[in-house]
Length: 196
Image (cartoon, rainbow, N blue to C red):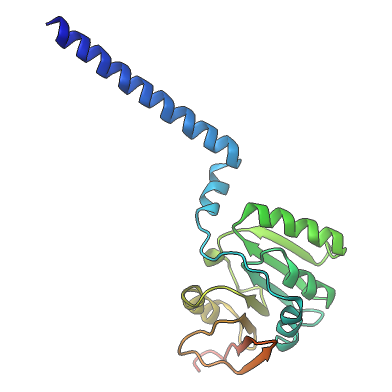
């Protein structure tokens, strides 16, 4: 009987230790990442950050016809270089990324470039962005992510809006134009009139 009681007490103690360790581990994790929201966003990283060379950024902005009055959304904005380049052309530019460190870095890059009045970065899952305000959408993602975004692009963007992708196409949606810069491919699509 004593052996049974001792076994029960040891089991109860083990459960208490595991519960306490789990609680503290969870508490520390929440403190380290800031908030549960930031933690959720970080878990939604669907594309690794690979910087787009500046000459490719310049060609993307040119191909998209970015000008003053445009609203440019850069999906997966990384270090903010596309957002900054678009803002320097006079466009209102917004970058979206889930990586908190890249969001901080790109906000600092925007400040250093002196384009804070036209450029901003939001920490948000790119698959949840309301694209309707944009006249130009830029991206350097992955083929499967492009295909996930395609229905939102076609549904939410106004006719005449432009979509520019570095390196990856949109499957069966044929681009209006394809250009190459130093071995890199850039695709342009224009949103058709509704019903086309």
